[in-house]
Image 1 (cartoon, rainbow, N blue to C red):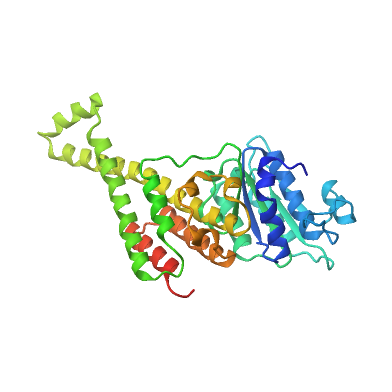
Image 2: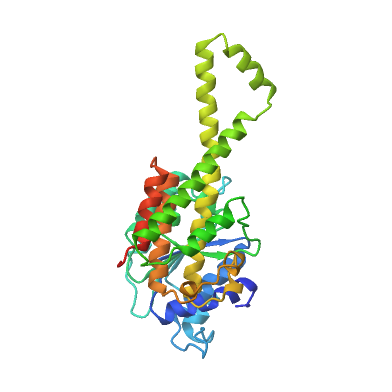
Length: 344
């Protein structure tokens, strides 16, 4: 496998995961080059199966299993790709994968499932696939490859380990980002409820700022139709009520969009902490800039199991706030208290 920037960045993550027997059952590969994501899958699978690892813990690329993976002749692999004119992945294909994961395999082998362009699953198909994620078969691994991660359900994202393979990274440069990352850098695992509650207060203040910003955007609109109907509503109570409801709905929509940026940034912080704990250097991270001015000892010395725990909490926070009708302040409070409690 060619060592592109993406692969060089995460090579140590893969080899350390295999060496320490900390291999997840499902990985979500967020990429902008589908072929390179497929090459990544090959490298990962070969590293797991190869019994003649090199001095740097990479696959030998010479043994039978390495050759089978490279030539796409490995007998215990199932790949799903979009089909038909609609270029979709249908429920029938997911059922086929479920059955595949329960077939017998010889010792020394694993079942491998790869879903190419996973964003081509519609909501029904994704919900069906959740059962496979929630009840993983032993000696099995699943890779989801996508260029459109936002098309996947938050519940799928939260049940997989996301690996960023993008060269064209997402920039967290919204107005509140610097304050947010400063807050997260101050939250040390095991540091106690006092730290957690202080961080909760600060993040909830950011959410309030976002809601005020959404209201201002709606109120400051100079749309001609809006001005006209507001004049009409002065003498029509029913119309005034309708306009008020529409304005509230628009404000909420803008707020949720702004809030998702913040939640995505929180998730990014903890997913990259896991990469750091796995041995990847700061400058090799997808978004190293969020750590450059925040080089704290606890970040550099974070243990991998603590990083995994933190990311799992961030996954749950993202899922609960994006998918369910729950209160921001309660979820943030629970997230921070779980993150900072003295023992996990």
